[in-house]
Every structure is written in C-alpha cells, then in structure tokens.
Length: 423
Image (cartoon, rainbow, N blue to C red; front, side, top):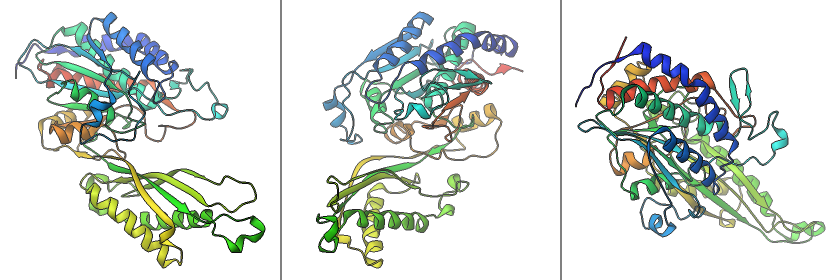
C-alpha cells in the first residue's frame, strides 16, 4: 500500500468544524426533498449537483428493470426503476492504494399521517441539536457524514492513493439489495464497503438476512346474522397472528449467533400490514397479513422459507384451526453478511472507533449484496439509532453526524493510502 504524508489532526479537526454549517445546511435541504420509494430522482440530483460543485467526479444513470431482473440476486417484487437514478460520487486516487466505497440508499419510507408529527415531516427543523424529518436518521444523516469526510480529505490532501467513492442507490426501503445491484451492473467494485445505516456511531460487522412473507386466509362469506353457515377469514387470521407469535418464541435461540446475542429476539417476526373485508355486514371470505422474518446471517433462506410455512400450518392444526385455509407466499428475500473481525478492515475500524468487541446490525440492509457476490469486506456504520428509523418525529443528532464524519476521515486516510493522522 502506498503511504502518503501524515495528516495533522489539528488541520483536519479545524476543517471538520469549519464545514459544520455547510453540512448542516445540506442535511436540512436533503430532508426537505421528499424521496419516498419510487420518487428518489429529485433528491439524487440534488446530491449529484452538490458533488459536481464541490469538485468530485459524478456518475448518474438509470438502470432498466430488465437488466436487474436477469440477476439471480434480484427480487421480482419492486417498484419500477424508471425515474429512480443511481449516483456515484468519486474522489479518484493517484494509484496504488486500496479503494473504499460508502453506500447510502436514497429512498425513505412514507409519512402516512403527517399530523402526528410535532414538527414538519419534511422540514429538517433543528431543535436542541437534533435535526428532524423523514430520513434524517435513515439514512440522510449517515450520507452527510460520508460526504463530509470525503470533502475534508479532498480539501486537506487532494487525491489519496486509492479511490474513495459514495454510491447513492434507490429502493432499499422497497426491496433490499435492488439498488446495490444497479451499481454492480454499472461495474463499480471496491476493496472495502461501508453501508451507511443508523448504528449509534459504532461499526457493525454483520447484518441480518430476511424474508418478506404474505399469508392469505380464505373463508366463506355469508350475512353476519347467519355467520354459523359461513367461515370467517378474519378468525383464521387471528389464529395466524397467534401462531406467528408462537414461532417467534420457539425460534428465539439467542445463543445461535454471538454477534446478535445482545438483542432480545434472535429471529424477529414482524407483521406490518393486514388487509381484508369488502362488504359491510358480511363475514370476510379473504384477508391477508404480510411482514418480515428477520434471520441470522448464517441461516439458509430456502430452509427457513420451508420452516415458516410448515411450522405455521402445524401450529394452526394443533390449535384446532384449518391449515388448509391459508396459503403462504414469499415476496422478497435478502442475504445477511458477516465480516471477518480479524481482517484488516475490522481491525482498522476497532482503532478508529475505539471498540474492543463486535456486534451485528439488528436489521437487513444493502450490506449482503457485495459481501456475498464479491466477498467485499463490509461494515455497517452511521449516526443515529434504529429506534428513530421510520418513526414519527424521526431525528438524528447533528453532533453524531459530525462525530461519525471525523471517524470516517481517519478510516479513509489509513485505508486508502495516506497514513494515520498525527495525534
């Protein structure tokens, strides 16, 4: 690895602090551009314009749905990619150094009831050091941390030995892994990847695999005054929800993976949507629930598909319900990942973050794609907490955004070939 001159801590620290007002302004602007899944274009173009004005190379493109669907790692269930660009912001290296790629998703979840927010959901309002708005935590705060670090290094050092890149990909909230595939199909690879997610400022060396499922319950509709002549699909659905709770308890093997043992649930099952009923005063003949089964990185997705369907039917039969009244289908799946904690990326992250033990990121994310396809050493890292992600009054603390930006400066300098900062 080529090693350049050391970077004085004082100079970098001064520039990090000097850039704070500009980066806060960019974060607030970013939150103000609504980028709900399917409508990310304006936000991505905002970041692309900022990158060009700052002097970075940029590559902005759209990927055809057919190109992604031809990949075995793609999911058929997703919003069309039309109008949903992918962006690379790059500081090109002088050569001979290791490359690093930061990855952020451009989309955010919707705000179905903005009246429940105490601030404007798209305001980017600052209160007591917190920046509020949809996407502040998940994941525009992390995006700004990475851009902040890249800007500090470009202004202090110019080109490092290795390329430093940030990719902004569509669709993570809609279909995990979809956006990263658009970047891979464009030919982008790196020697290390940092997936930007809210991790309370601590690097995480693993992430969950997962499945999105739908359970359809069938009944026979009759008028409610003659309900004994029909079969109520909603009654079956109640039994399904109880059975899923039972499976979650049964599968709660917290010792199965030490990196996830600190979390209360080894394999969470979350139902996030229930639909059914069409005619007033009638028994429901069709209703459905859908949600996620979050798995451990080493779990076989195919095996757990079979277990979910088989053991759900067994639970219904044991309770005296009708297992033949349901059908199960899987709408999405995504791979987990695990980085080697004794590898160079994790050892560097330990020093930068000042940690002496590792844990996994308690969610699925984009990390599994490159880690599995290209064996890219990958960490999940960023400001904010999953407790705030998708929440009413979502926020990120700006001091955490700055703290993570400073850590990323150290990480990039050593990884990509400029040497450690002087301390």
